[in-house]
Amino acid sequence: MNRGDGHTRRCVVLGLAILGSALLSSCANDPRSGYAFDSAFRTDIETVAIPIFDNTTFTHGLEVTLTDAIVKEIHRTTPYRVVSAERADTLLTGTITNTDMRRLRTAPDSGLVQELAFEITVTFEWKDARSGRVLVSRRNFRAAESFVPGRGAQERLESGQAAAVHQMARDLVGELRSAW
Picture 1 (cartoon, rainbow, N blue to C red):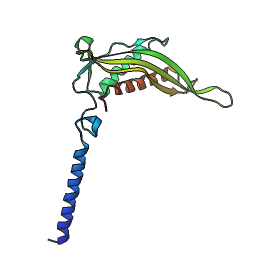
Picture 2 (cartoon, one colour):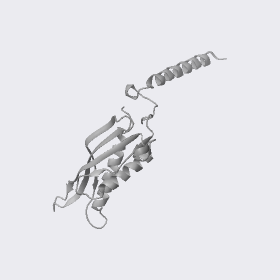
Picture 3 (cartoon, rainbow, N blue to C red):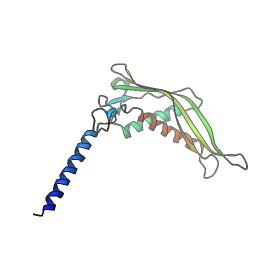
Picture 4 (tube, helix red, strand yellow):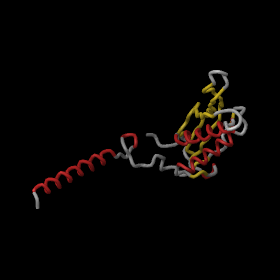
């Protein structure tokens, strides 16, 4: 056996030991104190009830569309099951408090709007149905998506609304993750 082979082997073993200890020290039981391989979602919750959100705006039907998008996002990205309020561990309620169109870009020569953003503002609360404790509460929670208004190949207002609704659903469900 060559003397260099033993030295190389010791260096490799030492390097692996250092790497292993670095990886183990980066793991943590509490996600707030370092890297963790735990679930990003609460493990003490299995089910959530989501009644149709209230809507205090003049944008009719948005509450049904938003509630449906939130249910689909929960099914798609979380371990939670959506069930009736009687069977749920938690209850997610909310109100659409404002919708707005913001001008993002206009044509310099004509002043016509080239790009708009549809913005939705909600207030929501996620409550433990067993204890009554509020898990997450947000006021004036906003999401917006841009679209190109106009005729022909451009997008309609409904496509801007739909994009903003889906963005709101993604952002809102993201708030249901455990504290980091």
